[in-house]
Image (cartoon, rainbow, N blue to C red; front, side):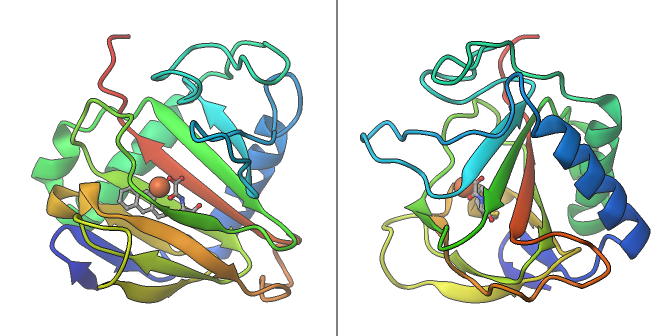
Length: 208
Ligand code: MD3
Ligand code: FE
């Protein structure tokens, strides 16, 4: 379903086998060094969702190679198979042409437990206009998709469930968005995840 120009939601894009595979990869990436950690925002706040980055890290400056606010370890590499998955997601939603130029090199993995949520923001650290690919695992959340002008209304609330794909390209790439709520205990029982994971794939636009 296209909820706005360039913003396409595909429920259940990942089958149970793929969801389990992706979850076990996330569990590996979450381990130290450069594993899951609490991130401070440029405004001085603390994110309630914890994060792991692959490829580069967006904080404290545009896509560094090192996690400086954690253990100082190099960011884990971005695996080629994840890039393939990203291109397939774009091909399925926006078409082969949009997928052709998308050389994904960054993954941001957000882990929501307890009362974690994400305030309305725009993703503007990337120098590339390539679509962002979002994959959800575990608990269902309320995803708030806003407009490009302000973090306030108008916005559309969509439920994201385990296995769902969301692709944000074109004019939707610069829209404000956030996660106001996660419904605890709604993850599929066969997945074995308490909480919610979101994996976003991005093209940094920085030289390799
Ligand atoms: C719309 N993540 O990592 S995924 C983020 O569920 C982020 O963890 C949320 O916002 C999460 O930056 C929302 C949906 C999403 C991701 C990236 C976008 C929507 C987007 C980039 C541009 C526009
Ligand atoms: Fe975002």
